Amino acid sequence: MSLEVVILAAGAGKRMRSGLPKVLHEIGGCSLLTHVVRTAETLSPKRIHVVYGHGGDIVRERLSALDVHWVEQRERLGTGHAVQQALPHLEGGDRILVLYGDVPLLTTETLTHLLKRGDSDNIAILTAVLDEPHGYGRILRDDAASVTAIVEHRDATPEQLEVKEINSGIMVLPSGRLAGWLNALGNDNDQQEYYLTDVVEMAVADGVQVTPVVVDESIEVMGVNDRHQLATLERYYQYREACRLMREGVTLRDPARIDVRGDVTIGEDCEIDVDVVLEGNVRIGRGCSIGPFCHIKNAVIADNVVIRSHTVIEDAEEIGQGAIIGPYARIRPGTRLAPEVHVGNFVEIKKSDIGRGSKVNHLSYIGDTDMGAKVNVGAGTITCNYDGANKFRTTIGNDVFIGSDTQLVAPVKVGDGATIGAGSTITRDAPEGELTLSRVPQKTRPGWQRPKKKS
Ligand code: UD1
Ligand code: MG
Image (cartoon, rainbow, N blue to C red):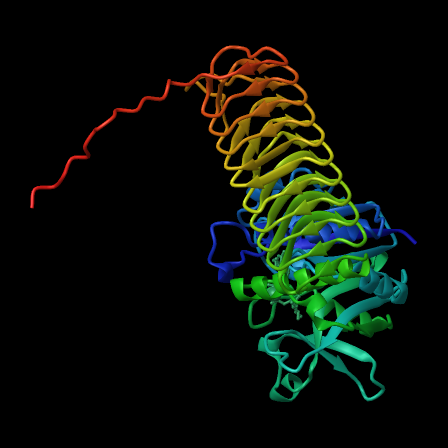
């Protein structure tokens, strides 16, 4: 049976009090609408239609990478009207699944279950039983527990308001009959809107079966209307990601204190300490350890890497096996660290290749540098890569020893096996195998007196 998905996303989202349309707000580093589209994609529908509206051009622009068909709803006249806008664009699938762009945590499992209950003749509705159903449409059932209608909170009688089973808004409808029902919708209700929910009563009158499917975890059907709900769903999403990582063999010191904001994979037997943020595309191998308070964004990290506390890594193309980084290290874009490299405290590395087993352990800046293997860089070494207008590269061979407090003024080359004396300012190439240093001769003034304050 073929399926098309219609995602309703034309709401204004006033309660967010934001210049940004609601569906562009993010959970786990990904827009609400993107979450919904990604879940919809897992159902392999013929097409995904997104109904956008107020301020929607920016939604189309920002999410232009999504493989969806955009349908504009010029006037926001209700959920029924919104689905109606998509009708002319449907390709004639057997069923239509209606999703909301602001309900981001629905799972493929729940939707698959719902789809199993709806065929090309009947309707299946995802419902939830809530202790506090305030504001939601209520599911009305007859004595035989069959669904007869949905009534909106604001249109409900006091008796109907007692009902705890609510409409999530997510439903599967038979394509063949939908147009007829939608065309017959009226807007004689408190909001003077064309309600998709009124289709249910019409369907029942036509002898069509309406099957309610109660969701296991009601948070799945929760929508984002304000920043408080956004934060609630963010925390739940993070809890889910933490559970996934633990299932996959990762030890989390505190599952409530890790944030995953993107596509993150972590190998077995990794250990992650508290307050770690993983963002964008992060691939971490097996047996790694990440200390507390680290921020890692877009990085490929091999096996058995140790990242100590307060380390920041951004756009690292490769962190080799067995590398040790931090505490308080900063790895910036375009950096590759070969296996067994050590980068210590207060070291910043940018756009550089560091060869196997090399060590930059203390208080250094290495930028635009190609460094060989087994190099030892002393404390306080700086590659002076920028003249205020241009950037230049520093090349360091294998097995080089650079004394502390050295400045390497690029462009400059240090040959294999060279030694640079501490405190040097290197402005010309240093030959291989030799000691090079630049140092002002030391003086002592015998008998010199320190000035004294007048009493
Ligand atoms: C709707 C349901 C209600 C259900 C609740 C669940 C109706 C009439 N009511 O109510 O039974 O309990 O959701 O959250 O369907 N939208 C459009 N165009 C419109 C109107 C809405 O695209 O003209 C979109 C919104 O962006 C949103 C979704 O449809 O994603 C639901 O709209 P909303 O106004 O939030 O409906 P509720 O009043 O919450
Ligand atoms: Mg709503």
